[in-house]
Image (tube, rainbow, N blue to C red; front, side, top):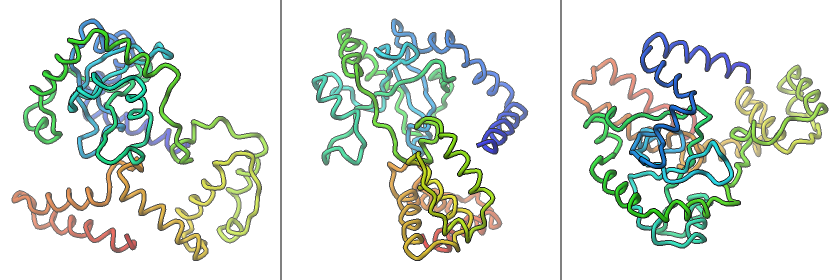
Length: 301
């Protein structure tokens, strides 16, 4: 975790050095009043929101409009992704919206989509920007139609009762917590003193000893964390059954859009192919791209 902190700090320094105006703009969004001004529930202006909760294929960006204060979190503003038709939000009942909001996409009935509501936390320095900051080339690339977004926003603003409805949807509900320890490291509480002592012992063990350890832990996250620790650092220490388990995990991460990996293997290949076919790509760069395209096969993916 400490290595992540150092990497984040160095990355922030690099952004400050290379893009000082961008750095200052985002740094100033620590101010909750500034964020609240952009997500004003009276004005309901369209803004751009950058978040990993939007697909990487869409640039992790979306045009949004603020609709309601979160009923249980004073720092939460509920927004709507204006790429989508607001008709289901307007026409469905509170229960029907909950059934299509607080659920994983893979668990939705065939043909149904999640209601595109999200909560922006004004105390977490969200990345927001005016719509004017995006140019026509970017809107085309990220499939953002400003005219359609404005039309959807007008439809939502014309329904003043929607504010109360959205608050009812979120009253007593939240998104299901993830069970993946990689994504839930800070979401499952602190490790017990006993578990921390055992984890310190694990650090000093050899790969051979790690594969044989039968330590029992209080926290259910640790066994899976230990398995992935071994697989990532000493794959040769895995048994045949463990290797199959690791291969399944990797393939799911790279092929399942719901695995929160940022980009799937198919999208990776598609983007490489597009770059290879671009006329301005040099022969040197094309050779590198082709090597990258061969990479999945080299690790049996």
